[in-house]
Structure formats: C-alpha cells, structure tokens
Image (cartoon, rainbow, N blue to C red; front, side, top):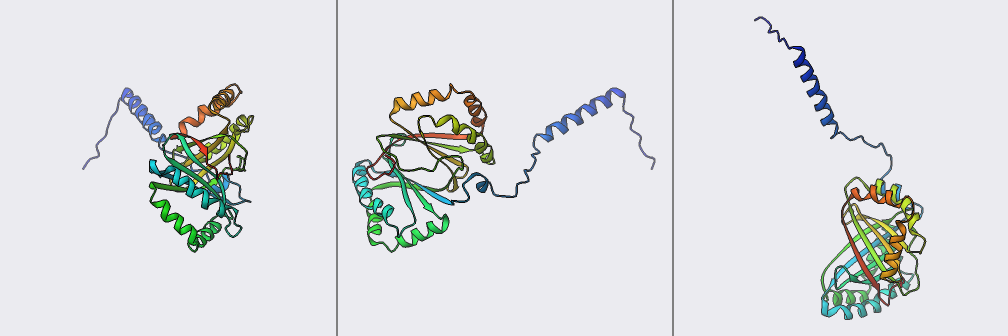
Length: 266
C-alpha cells in the first residue's frame, strides 16, 4: 500500500499554526504551578511557639429562653475559666445584636493546642455541674455548631478589655487554596486598622468549615465603627488590599455582638 501524501497550502498552514497556538494558550489556563512549600499552610500563618488553639461556638437559642440561657452560662462558664485545673480560657461570650438573632457566641482559648483541648473535654465529662449545665442548655437550644481555629501570627492575641464596647465578628469563606494569599495581604492590612485599638483577634479554621477566616473588632458604638472604617480608606494602600482580597472571598458575613456579663472582653 502506497503512503498517502497530504499537501497543505501555505494559507492552511498558517491557520493550523494559529489554532495550535490558541489551543496551547487555552490549555495553559488550567495549568497551575505547584508551590514547593515544605510546611503546612497553618504552620506558616500561625504563632508556632505558642500553639494556642481556639474554639468558637455558635448557639441558636429559642427566643423565649435567651435570658435564662445567659443566666445559666454566667453561673458556669466563668468558674471553668478561673479554675487552673482546666487548661483553657474564656476569651469572650456575646449575644448577637445585628445578624442572626437570639444567638450566643463563645470563644475559648486552649494553651497547649490539641492536647489541652482533649484534657479539658475529658475532665468536663467528670464535672457533674457541667453535665447538668449541658443538659439544661440543650433544652434551650434550636441548633449549635463550632469550629476549631488557629490565630494569625500578625494579629494581636485577644486580651480582656474594659467596656462598654460592641464587637463585630466578620467571617469570610475563602476560595480553597487562597489562605496564604489572604495572610500575605492582611499582614500588611492590619497596620491600617490599629489606630483606634479596634483589632481584637484574627483566626482561621482547622476543623469545621474549612478556609474560613474570622476577624474580631471592637468599637465604642456603631457610629465609632462607621468612622473607623471610613478612616481606613483615607490611608494609602488600604484600597489596594481590599482590591486584591475581595476576589479571594466566596462568601462573607458580619455580626454585631454585645458582650454578656461573663465575658472578659467587655
């Protein structure tokens, strides 16, 4: 069988060459270079030497039970916070004012990471007062969820502060794979948000909803919040940070919260 010779005109060669280039360009859109990092992203973003682990709890309370729920928490949670037997601290406890209504938010810190968390949970199972509290609390709740968090290295560690203040919890669901980018931009951005001591803490999730970031801010009132946020736009560089971080976000949420009597953050 004789070989078949295919003759292509010069114009056809140009067209085929152009198509090949376009296909090569199109395929390159789906090729992503692998960043040869030798450490987990969480280790690159957090304060390794301190190994603090945080737990944030969201409790949706039956509307008619909110006062009783707050009273129950005020009787039990501070005692755990103050007892050196438990390697944990109550960072803050709030009721949502604007956002999801009839919601309580609790933030705990475990110095020593996961071993401290496990130790606390095992000890609480033997604490009869806490078990009664959990049973009574369950009667007042419609739903609850939690997350385990690490703190960004470039944020201040949350410490008790005097009030009165309102608190804003801004939660960002990021696109998977963008946490390092977020951290790089916010390591610079946090410098624009320190003038009124509004920055309280910044965290990212480890267990629960992943690629979730929480920023916690404190303000004297809603007008102070408005003035402080507007002031950030007057600083050179803030607009650039916003421009580059917004595309990293899939979803964002804001809660304005009021601290309860038991909260170290007032």
